[in-house]
Length: 282
Image 1: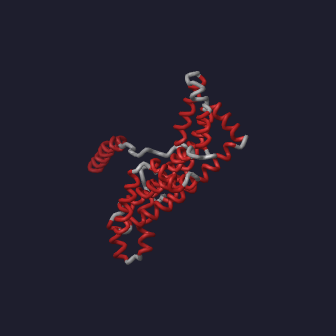
Image 2: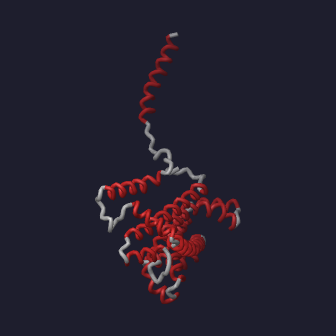
Image 3: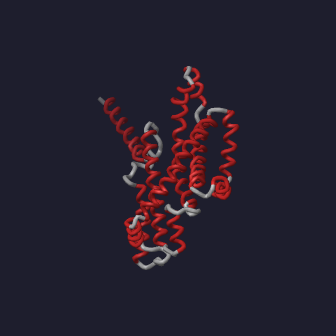
Protein backbone atom coordinates (compact mmCIF):
# COMPACT_ATOMS: atom_id res chain seq x y z
CA UNK A 1 0.00 0.00 0.00
CA UNK A 2 2.80 2.38 0.91
CA UNK A 3 4.56 1.53 -2.32
CA UNK A 4 1.44 2.53 -4.29
CA UNK A 5 1.15 5.75 -2.32
CA UNK A 6 4.80 6.51 -2.96
CA UNK A 7 4.34 5.89 -6.67
CA UNK A 8 1.30 8.18 -6.82
CA UNK A 9 3.22 10.89 -4.97
CA UNK A 10 6.10 10.58 -7.41
CA UNK A 11 3.76 10.89 -10.39
CA UNK A 12 2.12 13.95 -8.80
CA UNK A 13 5.50 15.58 -8.21
CA UNK A 14 6.61 14.81 -11.78
CA UNK A 15 3.40 16.28 -13.16
CA UNK A 16 3.87 19.37 -11.02
CA UNK A 17 7.41 19.74 -12.31
CA UNK A 18 6.26 19.38 -15.91
CA UNK A 19 3.38 21.85 -15.57
CA UNK A 20 5.53 25.02 -15.54
CA UNK A 21 7.37 23.77 -18.62
CA UNK A 22 4.09 23.47 -20.47
CA UNK A 23 3.02 26.92 -19.33
CA UNK A 24 6.37 28.41 -20.32
CA UNK A 25 6.02 27.19 -23.90
CA UNK A 26 5.57 30.08 -26.28
CA UNK A 27 4.13 30.26 -29.77
CA UNK A 28 6.86 31.40 -32.13
CA UNK A 29 4.74 31.44 -35.28
CA UNK A 30 2.97 34.66 -36.35
CA UNK A 31 -0.39 33.09 -35.50
CA UNK A 32 -3.58 32.85 -37.48
CA UNK A 33 -3.93 34.91 -40.63
CA UNK A 34 -6.27 37.84 -40.06
CA UNK A 35 -9.04 38.40 -42.63
CA UNK A 36 -8.29 41.26 -45.04
CA UNK A 37 -5.17 42.07 -43.00
CA UNK A 38 -3.38 43.65 -45.97
CA UNK A 39 -6.08 46.31 -46.22
CA UNK A 40 -5.38 47.56 -42.71
CA UNK A 41 -2.43 49.73 -43.73
CA UNK A 42 -4.15 51.41 -46.71
CA UNK A 43 -7.34 52.01 -44.69
CA UNK A 44 -5.33 53.54 -41.84
CA UNK A 45 -3.44 55.76 -44.30
CA UNK A 46 -6.75 56.87 -45.83
CA UNK A 47 -8.15 57.65 -42.37
CA UNK A 48 -5.10 59.77 -41.49
CA UNK A 49 -5.35 61.59 -44.82
CA UNK A 50 -9.05 62.34 -44.24
CA UNK A 51 -8.46 63.47 -40.64
CA UNK A 52 -5.61 65.79 -41.65
CA UNK A 53 -7.70 67.26 -44.48
CA UNK A 54 -10.70 67.82 -42.21
CA UNK A 55 -8.48 69.51 -39.61
CA UNK A 56 -7.04 71.86 -42.23
CA UNK A 57 -3.49 70.51 -41.84
CA UNK A 58 -3.05 69.87 -45.58
CA UNK A 59 -2.94 72.44 -48.36
CA UNK A 60 -5.93 71.62 -50.65
CA UNK A 61 -4.03 72.89 -53.67
CA UNK A 62 -1.17 70.43 -53.06
CA UNK A 63 -2.97 67.48 -51.45
CA UNK A 64 -6.75 67.61 -51.95
CA UNK A 65 -9.04 65.88 -49.49
CA UNK A 66 -10.08 62.26 -50.20
CA UNK A 67 -13.67 63.31 -50.92
CA UNK A 68 -12.41 65.82 -53.48
CA UNK A 69 -10.41 63.09 -55.21
CA UNK A 70 -13.46 60.80 -55.21
CA UNK A 71 -15.61 63.57 -56.69
CA UNK A 72 -13.02 64.27 -59.40
CA UNK A 73 -12.73 60.55 -60.20
CA UNK A 74 -16.51 60.24 -60.51
CA UNK A 75 -16.57 63.23 -62.87
CA UNK A 76 -13.78 61.77 -65.02
CA UNK A 77 -15.60 58.45 -65.12
CA UNK A 78 -18.95 59.90 -66.16
CA UNK A 79 -17.48 61.98 -68.98
CA UNK A 80 -15.70 58.90 -70.36
CA UNK A 81 -12.13 60.08 -69.86
CA UNK A 82 -11.15 57.71 -67.06
CA UNK A 83 -12.57 54.46 -68.57
CA UNK A 84 -10.75 55.11 -71.85
CA UNK A 85 -7.45 55.84 -70.12
CA UNK A 86 -7.77 52.80 -67.84
CA UNK A 87 -8.50 50.48 -70.77
CA UNK A 88 -5.51 51.81 -72.72
CA UNK A 89 -3.18 51.39 -69.74
CA UNK A 90 -4.45 47.86 -69.07
CA UNK A 91 -3.82 46.85 -72.67
CA UNK A 92 -0.26 48.18 -72.62
CA UNK A 93 0.54 46.63 -69.25
CA UNK A 94 -1.02 43.27 -70.15
CA UNK A 95 0.76 42.99 -73.51
CA UNK A 96 4.17 43.83 -72.06
CA UNK A 97 3.58 41.61 -69.05
CA UNK A 98 2.70 38.53 -71.12
CA UNK A 99 5.75 38.97 -73.36
CA UNK A 100 8.03 39.48 -70.34
CA UNK A 101 6.51 36.50 -68.51
CA UNK A 102 7.08 34.11 -71.41
CA UNK A 103 10.60 35.43 -72.05
CA UNK A 104 11.59 35.22 -68.37
CA UNK A 105 10.36 31.64 -67.92
CA UNK A 106 11.86 30.34 -71.18
CA UNK A 107 15.25 31.96 -70.54
CA UNK A 108 15.31 30.74 -66.93
CA UNK A 109 14.59 27.15 -67.98
CA UNK A 110 17.17 27.26 -70.76
CA UNK A 111 19.78 28.73 -68.41
CA UNK A 112 18.94 26.63 -65.36
CA UNK A 113 18.80 23.24 -67.09
CA UNK A 114 21.81 23.58 -69.37
CA UNK A 115 25.38 24.70 -68.75
CA UNK A 116 25.57 25.94 -72.33
CA UNK A 117 22.37 27.92 -71.87
CA UNK A 118 23.68 29.35 -68.61
CA UNK A 119 26.90 30.45 -70.27
CA UNK A 120 25.01 32.20 -73.07
CA UNK A 121 22.09 33.66 -71.15
CA UNK A 122 22.85 34.32 -67.48
CA UNK A 123 25.64 36.83 -67.97
CA UNK A 124 23.67 38.69 -70.64
CA UNK A 125 20.58 38.98 -68.42
CA UNK A 126 22.61 40.19 -65.45
CA UNK A 127 24.27 42.76 -67.71
CA UNK A 128 20.81 43.90 -68.77
CA UNK A 129 19.78 44.05 -65.11
CA UNK A 130 22.72 46.35 -64.33
CA UNK A 131 21.58 48.83 -66.98
CA UNK A 132 18.70 51.08 -65.83
CA UNK A 133 15.76 49.92 -67.92
CA UNK A 134 14.22 53.38 -68.21
CA UNK A 135 17.60 54.58 -69.48
CA UNK A 136 17.01 52.42 -72.57
CA UNK A 137 14.03 54.54 -73.61
CA UNK A 138 15.97 56.92 -75.95
CA UNK A 139 17.65 53.98 -77.70
CA UNK A 140 14.39 52.04 -78.07
CA UNK A 141 12.71 55.12 -79.53
CA UNK A 142 15.43 55.25 -82.21
CA UNK A 143 15.01 51.52 -82.90
CA UNK A 144 11.25 51.07 -82.66
CA UNK A 145 9.84 54.56 -83.12
CA UNK A 146 7.88 56.60 -80.65
CA UNK A 147 4.61 54.64 -80.92
CA UNK A 148 3.23 51.78 -78.83
CA UNK A 149 5.90 49.22 -79.70
CA UNK A 150 8.71 50.70 -77.66
CA UNK A 151 6.40 51.12 -74.64
CA UNK A 152 5.44 47.45 -74.71
CA UNK A 153 9.09 46.45 -75.19
CA UNK A 154 10.25 48.44 -72.15
CA UNK A 155 7.47 46.94 -69.98
CA UNK A 156 8.46 43.46 -71.16
CA UNK A 157 12.07 44.09 -70.11
CA UNK A 158 10.97 45.40 -66.71
CA UNK A 159 8.89 42.23 -66.24
CA UNK A 160 11.19 39.51 -67.54
CA UNK A 161 14.25 40.40 -65.44
CA UNK A 162 12.80 39.65 -61.95
CA UNK A 163 10.97 36.58 -63.27
CA UNK A 164 14.18 35.23 -64.80
CA UNK A 165 16.36 35.99 -61.77
CA UNK A 166 14.05 34.42 -59.19
CA UNK A 167 13.12 31.41 -61.31
CA UNK A 168 16.76 30.77 -62.20
CA UNK A 169 17.77 31.07 -58.53
CA UNK A 170 15.08 28.57 -57.56
CA UNK A 171 16.25 26.15 -60.23
CA UNK A 172 19.85 26.48 -59.09
CA UNK A 173 18.76 25.87 -55.51
CA UNK A 174 17.14 22.48 -56.16
CA UNK A 175 18.88 19.86 -54.03
CA UNK A 176 21.17 17.71 -56.17
CA UNK A 177 20.00 14.63 -54.28
CA UNK A 178 16.67 14.95 -56.07
CA UNK A 179 18.52 14.87 -59.38
CA UNK A 180 20.38 11.74 -58.32
CA UNK A 181 17.13 10.15 -57.18
CA UNK A 182 15.52 10.91 -60.54
CA UNK A 183 18.48 9.30 -62.32
CA UNK A 184 18.26 6.22 -60.11
CA UNK A 185 14.52 5.97 -60.79
CA UNK A 186 15.19 6.25 -64.51
CA UNK A 187 12.97 9.29 -65.08
CA UNK A 188 12.82 10.71 -68.56
CA UNK A 189 13.78 14.31 -69.22
CA UNK A 190 10.12 15.33 -69.41
CA UNK A 191 9.23 13.49 -66.20
CA UNK A 192 12.25 15.02 -64.45
CA UNK A 193 11.15 18.51 -65.41
CA UNK A 194 7.52 17.86 -64.44
CA UNK A 195 8.15 16.12 -61.11
CA UNK A 196 11.36 17.76 -59.88
CA UNK A 197 12.10 20.98 -61.72
CA UNK A 198 8.66 22.58 -61.83
CA UNK A 199 7.74 22.02 -58.14
CA UNK A 200 11.21 23.17 -57.06
CA UNK A 201 11.11 26.34 -59.18
CA UNK A 202 7.53 27.42 -58.42
CA UNK A 203 8.29 29.30 -55.15
CA UNK A 204 10.94 31.44 -56.83
CA UNK A 205 8.79 31.86 -59.92
CA UNK A 206 5.93 33.33 -57.88
CA UNK A 207 8.30 35.78 -56.16
CA UNK A 208 9.49 36.94 -59.56
CA UNK A 209 5.91 37.07 -60.82
CA UNK A 210 4.89 39.43 -58.03
CA UNK A 211 7.86 41.69 -58.74
CA UNK A 212 7.09 41.58 -62.46
CA UNK A 213 3.44 42.56 -61.95
CA UNK A 214 4.49 45.53 -59.82
CA UNK A 215 7.23 46.49 -62.28
CA UNK A 216 4.79 46.60 -65.19
CA UNK A 217 2.76 49.29 -63.43
CA UNK A 218 5.85 51.26 -62.38
CA UNK A 219 7.20 51.32 -65.91
CA UNK A 220 3.82 52.28 -67.31
CA UNK A 221 3.69 55.48 -65.25
CA UNK A 222 6.80 56.82 -66.99
CA UNK A 223 6.15 55.44 -70.46
CA UNK A 224 2.68 56.91 -70.77
CA UNK A 225 4.13 60.39 -70.40
CA UNK A 226 6.17 60.01 -73.61
CA UNK A 227 4.30 60.84 -76.82
CA UNK A 228 1.06 59.28 -75.55
CA UNK A 229 -2.44 60.50 -76.35
CA UNK A 230 -4.26 58.37 -73.79
CA UNK A 231 -3.61 56.34 -70.66
CA UNK A 232 -3.39 57.09 -66.97
CA UNK A 233 0.15 58.46 -67.24
CA UNK A 234 -0.91 60.80 -70.04
CA UNK A 235 -3.87 61.98 -67.95
CA UNK A 236 -1.56 62.72 -65.02
CA UNK A 237 0.96 64.52 -67.25
CA UNK A 238 -1.74 66.76 -68.67
CA UNK A 239 -3.05 67.46 -65.15
CA UNK A 240 0.45 68.49 -64.10
CA UNK A 241 0.53 71.12 -66.85
CA UNK A 242 -2.71 72.62 -65.55
CA UNK A 243 -1.94 72.25 -61.85
CA UNK A 244 -4.76 69.73 -61.25
CA UNK A 245 -3.43 67.84 -58.25
CA UNK A 246 -6.77 66.11 -57.70
CA UNK A 247 -6.57 64.50 -61.16
CA UNK A 248 -2.98 63.40 -60.46
CA UNK A 249 -4.12 61.76 -57.23
CA UNK A 250 -6.94 60.00 -59.08
CA UNK A 251 -4.35 58.46 -61.40
CA UNK A 252 -2.10 57.46 -58.50
CA UNK A 253 -5.01 55.87 -56.65
CA UNK A 254 -6.01 53.87 -59.73
CA UNK A 255 -2.41 52.70 -60.20
CA UNK A 256 -2.25 51.73 -56.52
CA UNK A 257 -5.53 49.81 -56.66
CA UNK A 258 -4.48 47.92 -59.79
CA UNK A 259 -1.11 47.10 -58.24
CA UNK A 260 -2.67 45.88 -54.99
CA UNK A 261 -5.34 43.81 -56.75
CA UNK A 262 -2.88 42.18 -59.17
CA UNK A 263 -0.44 41.38 -56.35
CA UNK A 264 -3.26 39.90 -54.26
CA UNK A 265 -4.36 37.79 -57.23
CA UNK A 266 -0.84 36.39 -57.62
CA UNK A 267 -0.70 35.66 -53.87
CA UNK A 268 -4.02 33.82 -54.06
CA UNK A 269 -2.86 31.68 -56.97
CA UNK A 270 0.43 31.03 -55.16
CA UNK A 271 -1.35 29.79 -52.02
CA UNK A 272 -3.54 27.48 -54.09
CA UNK A 273 -0.73 26.08 -56.23
CA UNK A 274 1.72 25.73 -53.32
CA UNK A 275 -0.82 24.54 -50.76
CA UNK A 276 1.42 21.52 -50.06
CA UNK A 277 4.06 23.73 -48.45
CA UNK A 278 4.19 24.25 -44.69
CA UNK A 279 5.74 27.68 -44.26
CA UNK A 280 5.85 30.39 -41.59
CA UNK A 281 3.19 32.46 -43.37
CA UNK A 282 0.80 29.52 -43.67
